[in-house]
Amino acid sequence: MIIDRIEGAVAVVETAKGEYRDIPLRDIDGDAHDGDVLVERGGRYVVDEDSAAARRRRLDDRRRRLFSGS
Image (cartoon, rainbow, N blue to C red; front, top):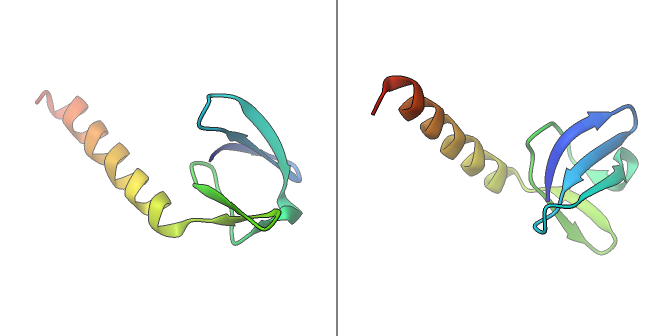
């Protein structure tokens, strides 16, 4: 799941099926931000720092290629 946005005390996340769900921030362990990857563990959610960093790198590479004309 990827955090699409934070609205007040709720993270709006996109699931692998492209559906959106609201998850209370109190149910998320870690410092959650837009674009972070969440993993469900035992009824709670954890920010997957490694997956989030890899996703940001891929997006940065894609953005760089798009704007460099390559």
